[in-house]
Length: 292
Picture (cartoon, rainbow, N blue to C red):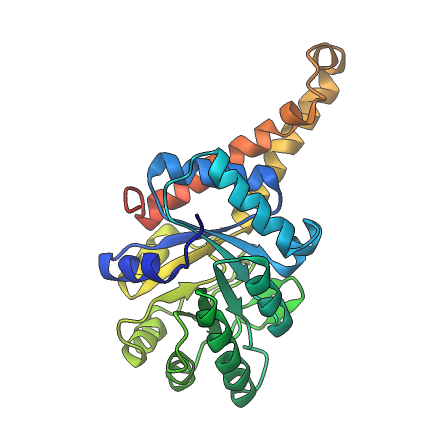
């Protein structure tokens, strides 16, 4: 059974660990993440961007797949199915589709419009029993067409959004979506301190978690980050493992054909195992093992 992310993140905030949001792109991604979460007894958030939702034929398909997989896999740890960087319309569609959590990304709007749209979605989400995340200060890089310039969030704007009744807040502290450039100067931990003072006790979300040094992530968790988003890291792990297998296949084609390694269940296995390893490592860094 899917749950909202509110309780798991409040517990993480109080316990000084973070829950990982791992974005899913297909059945293999979902199976890998759920398997690791259950084995490590960690709560987990399955993130779905609007682009990934469209790729999987729609939010209703995603929700039905995840719910059925949880039942068949006998998953007992807390799992939230969460829209990542949602538009206003996307949020409403996910509420209808059966998601248990949404994120409204209004960071590209002027603050007054962000507040107005967030207010409406807080009411809609909570009426349906969902948790809701909002964002202030756009995150650097690009996420399915939503582009940010690596801004840092204004503490006063953070408080204004938090006071609307959202459950957790994504606030820019110099983090970036996608691979981090060589000249990246790191997280603005001093600014994160100011944000947590502006919204005391409120769970903060760190987007762009792939590629941030572990010591900076753990320092951010100590300062109030309760949710860390991971996507690029798993994508790169999957791609690298699959490319390696393809190269081996080409070098040993007759042997691999005889073993029927062209079967997609076998062909995709190295990528599946790479995602599994990446998720295990991140859960260990976030400190959520055994917190289910």
